Image (cartoon, rainbow, N blue to C red; front, side, top):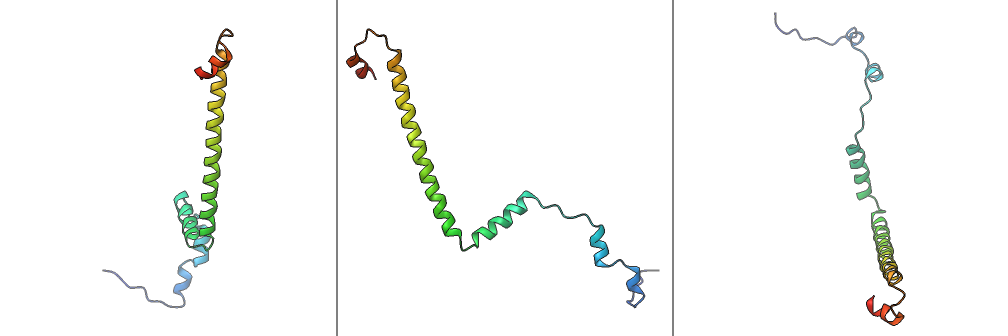
Length: 100
């Protein structure tokens, strides 16, 4: 005996579970972080708001860069003051500025 083809008949439907019944007992597909990122990235790239978001990101990076530069200057100023405060009192104030 070989393969016997199953012919469709109205009684055949009762032999197999319905799609809804299969979906009810199937485990839900887990969505990975890569899939979520891919979908969000795709929707962002094809969004009309992309140019606006890029402009905002650029302005934000300039603002953060300014804050970091100001912090660097403030730290340098504080380090200079610390060096001056550690100098002995016998050093004249004019000499302190030449040392810094």
